[in-house]
Length: 402
Ligand SMILES: Cc1ncc(COP(=O)(O)O)c(C=O)c1O
Image (cartoon, rainbow, N blue to C red; front, side, top):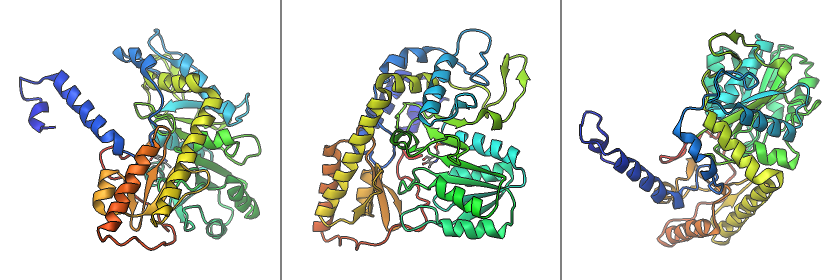
């Protein structure tokens, strides 16, 4: 869009035309937007009437502000549904709807740091960039843990780093669905490393922005007593594909930041943000109400099937590609720039990815494969199969990247 059309110094702005142009631009890009993990199959129109006014879920979800313009009743339902799914004990659970995965990580790591102010934070090289930023914000010491060739934490390296810090408290960030390869770190193996090193004062946080709900539906990710996991952060706009960015953080109530009562909002100040988007809670509630556990399991299965299909089709034309068995993410040898640009494929050197989120179709995968076939026919050598990336710090290409 022309900058002149939106220049606020002009006195001839046509707001409706600008909105129409933005929508058209986004819709034009939609068929080839398969590099960013946002589902597009859930109908949110029932919630749209709420967008005509302010709904402010200020403060703790358990304390209602004065007035009626909030959606905390829905927020509490969302927190409970997710806490049940993750088997967080009924009598010791807490969470809230965040502005996204980063805020969930911040809330969890801040709580962890309050528990263990002298802790070293360990996170892998494949952890999301928000983790390094949060370590900086909370002022903790940190250590970078290596990953294997498919992006999963190297537990031997973790053990070596923990060993070097003596029995100093540890905060370990595991990722459930790394940004580039959707690798999943195993909290049980992290727990074993900490136990063997005799580290009793510890907090294990799982950044499960992408794969948290699917893995919890599989029974693989849990916050149950004895799981060794203390907190989890989830994204709302990825698996649920909410039309605004949001997320959820969960932990035991006994370890959250206590927060103080704020007289003028009549709420408890336990959350990172004060004012929070009431519509976000309503969107998450809508996604859960409309599909339930079975519906979301079916969405997961269809998306994984499509990812399997994508690997088959790419392999059939000789294009190196692979995926983790649970993953929506298909890692493929990096195509020529014109192809990565068109399909908004995230790229990290020799490897790129496409993500078969719910709502992505076989037609889109077939069209991508056809473009790759054309690229290789036009003299583009098909990249040799290589091992996966060692470090995964990819930036998503294009406007809809994170
Ligand atoms: C593993 C992981 N954690 C955290 C985030 C951050 O989420 P947000 O952009 O919602 O803050 C992302 C987003 O890509 C992610 O992939």
